[in-house]
Image 1 (cartoon, helix red, strand yellow):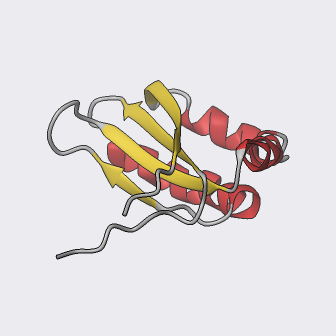
Image 2: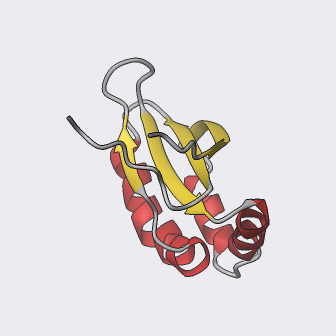
Length: 110
């Protein structure tokens, strides 16, 4: 019998970016080069990154954990006002065709 893991953080930011057709390699390069240094500095370390395999295609998914809504808002403000963030937005804008952001809450399981 496996054990169910209850996340240690109360909120997870579940982001899904839909990337323009055949542009995923370019997006990942821009994201790694320009966004990741800012995100690590302001949001901390992510839970992980994925790309879609079945279902909607060309999707880049990333998850970030937060203590609570105030923690989320504080760190997002730090990201959004970081002096290098506009360069990432300018370099990635033509690559992202849609974005979904969900805040999901941890549920304690037995």
